[in-house]
Amino acid sequence: MLTALLVACALLLAAVWLGLTVGARAIPLPAVWDALVHPGATSNDAVVVLDQRLPRTVIGILAGAALAVAGTLMQGLTRNPLADPGLFGVNAGASVAVLTAITVFGITRASGFVWFAFAGAAAAAVVVAFVGARGPDAGNPARLALTGAAVTAGLTAVTTLILVTSVRAFDVFRYWQVGGLTARGLDTVALVVAPIAVGFVLALLCARGLDLLALGDRTAASLGHSVGRTRALGILATVLLSGGATAIAGPIVFVGLVVPHLVRGVVGGAHRRLMLVSAPLGAALLVLADVLGRVVAPPGEVQAGLVVAFLGAPMLIALVLRRKQVAL
Image (cartoon, rainbow, N blue to C red):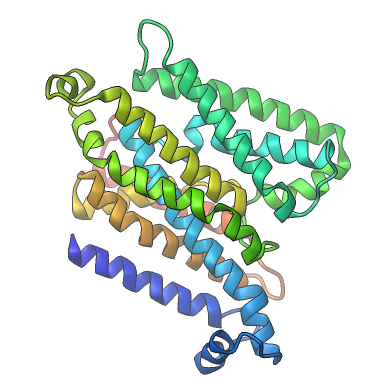
């Protein structure tokens, strides 16, 4: 486990180095270091590093780590290896909230609708958790998954309805919808650091409970564990992590789905180990996707969310083929 953690951290350091030095023009590492230690510098290199590359690298680290841990949580809570943070309607709820901010309140800047995205993600997850906890089969993983799919479908329909009736909303929303690390500053990141940090702590606190849930609810309860408490903590952690990541980076997919699978093949199924290694690996993956998006289509850029989806799909297919089957 220690070796895997060190490798993941090394990959993250390499990704940060590339994120700060690679772009439309290369900036040597000494110039990057000078800009970081002298934040008042006004050279062209310093401006590019501090105003563009540093914010998007920090956003990539924070969002990638949060999505990877949230994906680990979702797969543990639902006992579904294909679960990801969007399963609880997080992405769909955030999208509707952002559109509401644009069409109703006239907000067009990312720093203005970040809290709308966070609140929408949280509200959707709360609805899914509440409905999934009702009835004779309360808390069943399949019930939660089906409820999440239903809520996501409904919210997606609302999003589509707004977009086809408002050209102005579409023009603003499309840049957020594809998922990316641009057009957001460190002031926006500061708004979600605390919720994401709390989400990490809660995720680690319920890791042992997720290990027991893998044995089944009845077995976990017979061992004296509170299944309801673990699910409540896990859902709250998922909301904080994926809601915060979605608010600053948009609805990025595949990070929370692929990274836990990659890590599980190395460190096993213990959720604490999965989370500790998934966090730096998820951060490295998203930052590297952003770097790749800068260089594949010069002089323009491809958003990180599109790059992750392009890379994540074949990676997931390869994992499925390697394991021959995926138990749902």
